[in-house]
Amino acid sequence: MVKKKKGLGKGLGALISGNSGGGIAHALDAESADEGGQRLLFLDPRALKPNPKQPRMHFSEEGLEELSQSIRRDGVQEPVIVRKAGDTYELVSGERRVRASVMADLETIPAVCREVSDADMLKLGLIENIQREDLNPIELAHAYKQLIEEFRWTQEELADQVGKKRVTVTNTLRLLNLPDVVQERVADGSITMGHARALLAVESPQKQIAACRKIVSQGLSVRQVEKMASQDSATPTPKASKDPNLTVIEDELRRKLGTKVALKTSGDTKGKIEIEYFDLDELDRLLNLFRSMR
Image (cartoon, rainbow, N blue to C red):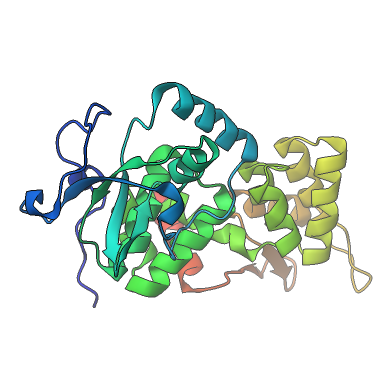
């Protein structure tokens, strides 16, 4: 059993103590480090090494330009977080501010220097982006997956660590089951998280891609995509026709459970319900859903 760690909700706040406003006119030297090994410096943003575990993969050029204009006008209002890396400094969090500062032609920016372990690099970068709501759903899903793999957390432990509901974490991770081309459309905002969740009920990757293209080209709503997925799954196969009443029940269960459901009959009154799951975490999600119905 992995020992459950304390939540990270205060992870960033713990790194910066007191008011870090822009009125400091000089950098504090190493002798002024506090008990936590923290120092406040002014560093060249171009010389900072990026965080190798930065969970954010996409940066909006328009958003960066807007931030750079704000920085030109008012300066960097909150220090970035760095750690010592040989003769230079490595960014822990604040890459968007660094990029915008370079665009604004700043020679130096305020930075809090702190001793941060390799294990904490991903966590702190992720927490900052979650708190600022800077990650798109696919970036968030990959970051969740990486945290689970690196720290061997369950989805329940991960949800506790990042301050999210378990079902939110599960639904985000399920996006990684979509084809890459669909994930790209979620990442660039062409389709929403609601659209993507509706596409998960579509039976095959090829049909998911085709449906995604329709969403983009025709501007379909989430409700329309849900209806499309329901109609697609209700299409009879050449092998055998199915009682339309059973199809209606299958469609309802599929929407409720968010996974493929099949009703199979044997005789007039007997039969079975088959519910698909793609891994043990998905099975756990379904079990928790059934328990909540009691």
